[in-house]
Each structure stands twice: as structure tokens, then as C-alpha cells.
Image (cartoon, rainbow, N blue to C red; front, top):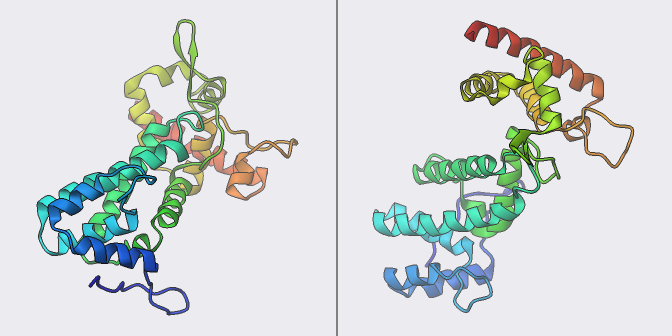
Length: 259
């Protein structure tokens, strides 16, 4: 019989898996490990025998708890593959700059969550056993709020030109502002590493503004249909400009020290 979940909702009621998930777990528990793994590998939700990700999460946690390392490794691979596939549509290359890196960051943080859950420090995956898609959507949005915008249509960081890849106009303008009028530096891989490290060291509010500027977002606009940095960060344009100015001052100082 599947073990009950430990987490409780805000009203103090314990988390309960949906009846169909409990029935799925009971059915899968009657199979041997090899048969379960074969069922886990069915990739299409429309296919007969498809195992919901809620059930995958349950057996992943159980495999770790019982020391079934090979089973854990295989289930982990299947679950991460599903997560990666879902991110290709929600964090698409056509919708935001640096989508591949963002997908990798989200997957990395999800793997960290699994590791923390396995260590028993927190019940990090209980809600994923109840409603996996909703739990992961919330997790994805939480990560995106920390590292940049969510599903907002953006201009790519690079645009394909006749002579190869060029930095987009918006990025050139942002770069020129905090690179001392020399946006060509951004083509230097060594300088990119220094710049990214300096940006990562900024306070969260300043780092978000710089990240959005690098992706081509406007600070403010009179057109209500345009998504702006002020709207995304839910503050007025003067606050955004103040954060930008403080960030650029810190970046100039940091890059001059590196030089």
C-alpha cells in the first residue's frame, strides 16, 4: 500500500493523492521492477499503459528509500526526460533569448530539489505526487522569476544576418550603456565571462533589470500592449531606471577592477 504523504496544505489538511493515482500505484506495485520500468518508458500520454508523472515521482522516491540504485537511476532519467520535453514548449527558443540555458537551469534546480527530498531534509516532492503538472508549472515560474521573464515573446539575443550571427539592436544599445560605449567587447568570450560574473554578483532587483535590458525589453512604453520591464517587475519606470543606473555603476566599477 502506498505510503501517505507528509505535507499539509495551508489549512492543515494532509495532502492526498487523487484516487486515480492511488489506483495506479496499487496496480504498479503488483508488478516487478522490470515490468514497472517498461511501463515508465511509455512516452505518450495517449498510449495505453502510460504512467502519470505523479506515479513516477512516487516510485523514484521509494527506489531511493529502499536503496534500489539502478531503479532510481532509470526512473530519474525518464522523469527528467519528460521535464525536458515539457520545457521545450513552455521555454521555447522562439519565445525568449537564451532559452536553452534557461531550460538547463530549471532542470538543474529541479534535480537539486529531488536530491534535497532524497536527503530527507524536506518533503520537497509531495505536491508533485498529487498534481505533477501544476507543481512543476509553479516551480518553473518560480525559477523564471528569479532568473528572468517567463513566457513573454522576445527578440532573440542573436539575429541571423547574411554574414553570420549579429548581436540584436536592443542588446547593442544596452551593452553600449554599461560597456563604456564599446558594445563590440560583448563579442569577446573572455569579456562575456567577466560580465556575466559581475551581473550575477548584483543585488537581485538590479540583476533582473539588467537581464531584461539585455534581452531587449523596454523600461516603459505609452503603448499598453507592449510588455515592459516596469510591468514585469510591477514598479514604476523611475524605480526601474534607478535600479539600472545603480547596476551600471556597479558593473563599470567591477569591470574596471578586473581590467
